[in-house]
Length: 347
Image (cartoon, rainbow, N blue to C red; front, side):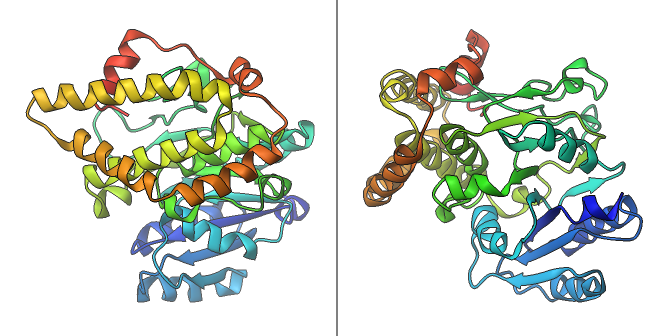
């Protein structure tokens, strides 16, 4: 890769007690870039992990910048903390469980140059988590919005050779495990990458939604395959109920701050109806996880009313695209199977 291209983008990696994964990720970048690194920022998410610090020191000769969070902030907070340390034209958020083989960045940068309205792009990710019948399957090729308020991902767990991965497409959201951001996007969405309290759930979808409203586009772009050990970090530290609590709180926060009148009148009621059905069905099956998660999320949301008002003022004040215009681009009609999947808790 030419030095000129290496100088155009930063890589931001966050770590939480997973130095082995971080080492694997950085070593794959060194192989990919022929023994060099782009500007790389590594953030220790307040784990106080000596192994992560030692790892960062071992890569200091490559110019790796190391920062330690004052408190645990999850994926959202750690990326917010590290983003100001990135100085290049494009910033690529890279999960610690990502491994590169062939170089995806020339294709990504070429696409950005050819599409000046593209603010966020995602490359071609493969699921690599050791599960039989899953390894090497597509990690989804962008996400689309449904009238339920949920998202659907073309190509999810399809074979890597599936044609869906070969075509660039505009989409509602890019997958946060590895995506590239044009620097101007954050400035035009109020100077905020993610909301800190989102922690690790729905932050990238909300950010993409805000980017669309501010006049940017989100794209899936075919690239050489990028391995992603899906769930390699989150599953070690969080229970399913904790994940659902924060996910359902954050998605509701995003709806209240990003949607205009059309989305709040059409999507939000259908989403709440589906959540109620989900809770009741699972209670009848003797499982109360969804009921407790939704109850917790609604209670938390009531306490966030000042934050909702402030965030909504910023988002709505910077929007140049209506809900109707956005829906025409990124909406995929859901099927009965999608509704059943949500009621069963498969989101």
